[in-house]
Image: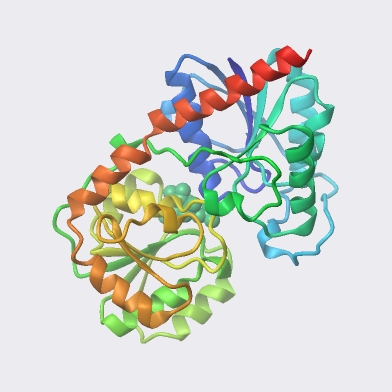
Length: 361
Ligand code: UDP
């Protein structure tokens, strides 16, 4: 297949501003290349692809980022800046569509979803978040009705957020697991990783680390500096160790030192990349039983689950997770989250859409 992958209109690949979508994009491109497909990636100017994607073409467009939907009111109107990157990405995608068998959209925004019935090449969407805005919910419901099969989700918990009339395509996610190494001997350290923004719930992890009396190393892009300062002020000095945003190679080397990773989303997390990345390094995860992490954390096998927003339950979950054998975490992700298996699921999905499209014509 000749596949055009249109990346997120928030940030550039490699910047961290796109969150988990960046890693998903590179895993699916590398995985489809390995299966012999031809890949072109369309992304914001300044984007970089890792070495596993070297055989893909990278087309870049400049322009202003979209405001991220999860930081806007639920009833917010669809918005485009004057020099919108989103508009430029889709002008290019539509102009080039005749050269591809399928266009795979990774951007969580209204315009690409709305375009679905209007393209000459099938346009499919891997939805990256749960429900955060009425305008997106509505256009997802439209696509589900007019083009069943053109939408895919990471987890059942994520898909359940939307009003779907068909049973959803669920793809999980995939990781280049050979890049992650198990650290057998943890340090007296807890960990947390993700965009530093209110929906990720860092404050709960910080409070629980303070209760347990272990420092909490924090990796990730500081998306909301005022929020980061509030979290810091709420716990004793020295509780938080800010480690910054690191590329995967360094992130995995540091993550592996943690005794347990805490994952404390305040929203219906679509998947939870950092949960799998920690497990790939042998780190058990204590997570709220909410969204994707509730499907990834297997009580007693890969970590422990706590009822959402309950600090006592999270404290107890961290203590249970400390007893989980580290090799079990890695074996679970080897079974369920490899890049190869993910690419196989993507391939099956894309082939079924192309086949139905061709038959209908
Ligand atoms: N991440 C990273 N370096 C860091 C911290 C995080 O590259 O120092 C990446 C991590 O690999 C993951 C992403 O940030 O892919 C966060 O994705 P997740 O699915 O956990 O949450 P999202 O940001 O999509 O809400």
